Length: 320
Image (cartoon, helix red, strand yellow):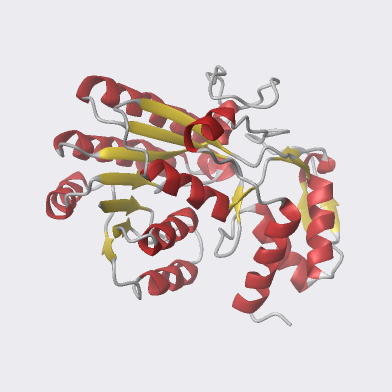
């Protein structure tokens, strides 16, 4: 089976490509390797991927539809896994045009290519941010999500609507994945856990928003790739499906920082701040539908996941 992964130089894309190549699939990865965060980190991920015999990389931008159509025609993937996006809730507020181009226009181009290529299946990344400030805990895929509180969340909700429409009109199977705060080795430097780790190791203060009164449903990267792998193997229907990919165990921000301090062996100097625009107080995943469909739910707890991340971080950045 031939699989096309967009965002292959990114955090989740890289790990997904490694997982699926290890299972014997032929994987083509696409990425534009933009400079939103350290391109050196992206290139180091790609260097590891390019050592795999069944991986092929194509540098491309999804906003270039004609080039994307050529890639689809040449590669003829049976499954497309869209993990490319412009991430960042706060970044979407200060750079709205970039978010629209990368998350709306690019996704539309991808849907058009899937429409034209017969027999393709699409799996795409959405986000827990679509739930906004929902007061119903945990968040269920059956909940109404019509009140996003950031442009990033709005683009992801738009992706879900567009994907459903293309499935309905053109009858190809589509699966959307609402990721909940994915973390782990080779992660994104713009995410809080990564930023906290770097600053604590350097002896710099960290900003703790909403004075620490926040909770996040952290999801370790291996649980994400296992979920995707099992979904790839499900070929029994032509449905539109939507799943939460989350740990089902929200962690208080101050407890999270305490756990990270223990793993690092260093205390953090904390600057307590008010809530930032576009942020939410809690995320919590209901994964019952996922468990029923693939007989798996994320299982790595924060203590184990952070220990693995810290070990990688110290080795990668040569901290002693």
